[in-house]
Image 1 (cartoon, protein in one colour):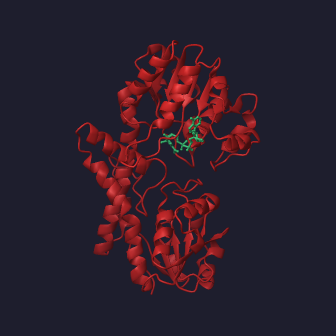
Image 2 (cartoon, rainbow, N blue to C red):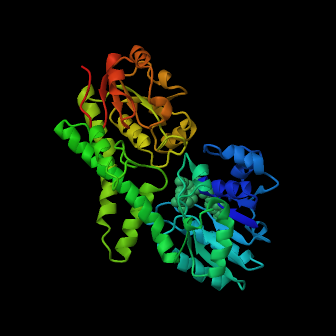
Image 3 (cartoon, rainbow, N blue to C red):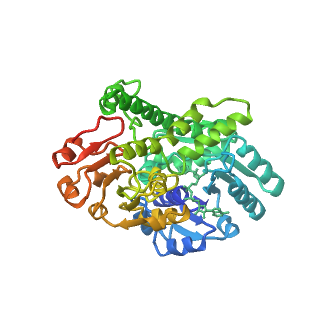
Length: 440
Ligand code: NAD
């Protein structure tokens, strides 16, 4: 089968490379020529484990790149749309990129095809796109809603081994064709779920909101533990042992970030409002999440006697490990706030140094931040260390070395990833999220 994928970001490039690796001929499209130039050289513009290998193995014979939509869709049976849907001012998802691509495809189409929406789009977008392509093209363009559930940092594995493939369409032929395309990754047919386009549009938001709610709920419990002098890690383990609840997505910390949870929750609240439905739980999850960085800063102010003039080492800038994505990363908000309160920061991250520096430049605090390529160097002369992202390499650090390098002794573990006793044994004062302070 020959397909095209429009939008070669985290989602589109992973989907394109994975389809190609299973034998499908894929043409990836992007509007960003600079990105395409890098891709043609096998240079992946962002960090995603395993992706570089896949792109190298499949291009150019099965995976190629272009900026020309009209050329890209020639002879292609299936065209995926994986462009961005960033948040608008009012919290709703901005679908203008999706509509622009649909218009380009409809105008350029010279044969019938499937237009598959992989971008996360609000309820009603399938209908809008269908109306648009029907109006602009004399060919039969069947629009399908096919939400993507991959997780950055493990996207390739997620694509190859999905929990489910959701195909939202009322067109049986479209369903058969997409089932065939996805068959290498869904050898148990029960993984492929054929539902209506409207339901498919809700699935993505409902899934992300539920996961985010679990995190926000545990963060609220962490706050309770903090106030009561209990240990949220003990609570988490016991609560998660209940089979009905399960242990995943129960980790308290600095809050969720990234390009999906915050934006999708706000968009869900907005869609609810448009339809007269109060999405109060989703709204609370966002609100609770926004308080996380403030809660940590309050502890820091208290324990350090104010932040003015303090030097703070920050381990981790990415919104989560195994990615260089800093979109809505709690670490960025934290660094901004530290600087606003008069501190200077030395930040490090195994993959997000460049993207982090750029983001901090955009928010106007880059000049108060230095960057270290390794975690120990970031600690030199620091009054405190904050672990802001739960990268594996931060889980078991040499705290004696950290103690020697730092001026102060405070470690704030924003992800509860280290063993507190190891920090205390090295003479440090440890404070996690929702855990009693240890060390004196
Ligand atoms: P991204 O910003 O990494 O990639 C989008 C790409 O689309 C960019 O490279 C951009 O240059 C390109 N683009 C924009 N307009 C274009 C046009 N007219 N023609 C061709 N290319 C164009 O975004 P992403 O993270 O891959 O997300 C894409 C969509 O998938 C979003 O709707 C997002 O919510 C959703 N999603 C993302 C994830 C994730 O983890 N990143 C997971 C599931 C769903």
